[in-house]
Length: 138
Image (tube, rainbow, N blue to C red; front, side):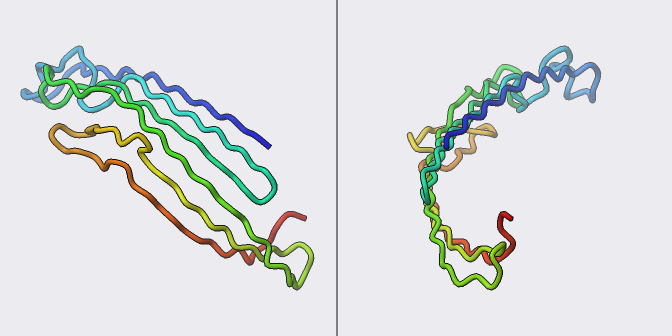
């Protein structure tokens, strides 16, 4: 089973009138708010395995100095999950499974900033386990 999901957002938030220190921004996009963002996911599930590849693009933004532009960036994440059925269910509609999940965020180790001069994390990893003992599909 495969699923592709895509999202796009265009947001022009113009500053019409503001405090004295905001006058240089009048008629321009609000600082730190990108006009364009895009994200997409590709999920693939085969038996007990599920893989997800996701990407998020954030367009360029101005900082608190209208001439200081933060560049846009694209982040790619990859995760994989295995679901193990433990059996021994008290009732047929209850599930008893353990999900093991591992992931890599910022797969290509992209350097980016959400605020000026504040670096965000590079490539990082996550692992986790979840025990499902609740209601399942009927």
